[in-house]
Image 1 (cartoon, rainbow over the protein chains, first blue to last red):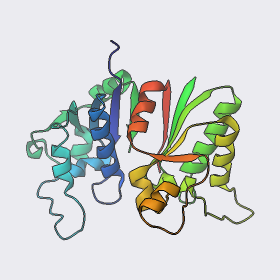
Image 2 (tube, one colour):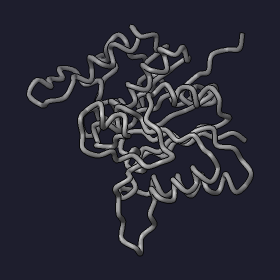
Image 3 (cartoon, one colour):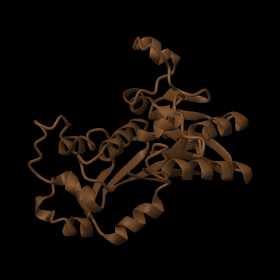
Length: 121
Length: 130
């Protein structure tokens, strides 16, 4: 049996400014359902997807933090947060939810080199 | 090499669609294979049948159709992205009781699973973000 295709999804956008963050999650969940090895990384402004106390009840959009928390339940391997981006946007490592793992530049390079396919959103 | 191409930009919003089109045309001309074109998000508008651009602008949807038909390329618009943007084939138009279909010949409507399949069967998947 051949090894499953690995897919690395790099998210770069804020949670509610457009549909990209949502599109990335839809792809992650679908790919994991088809048994691809899926890793996700929050980069640049996408680290704001992890901001605490997101309240979308008035905005007509789904709570993005809740969607991110579902990734591991649906067999996505890991959700990483690019530490230099988190520092730049004031997302402290102490405030990260349990399902997000910090990732340094060097590890990001390794993930990109190891993945069969990379998608940026 | 076997490529798949993901297009996430609408024809008139950014350089995404035209860049993807030119990349695809060039890859085919250079003798490469295209396993699948996958139009995601705003990219589904590349399959708009009813788009009428001014005569002095590139008719991007028509150029896609030409490429797809001349080289028998599999071209998929994402169903979830397409339906909410009003891109429907005859079957979907019938199902939702709409008076017209709006997807170009050569394109088909299917799910994200077709993109996952493209990851598994292409040497390279080239993604044109918005």
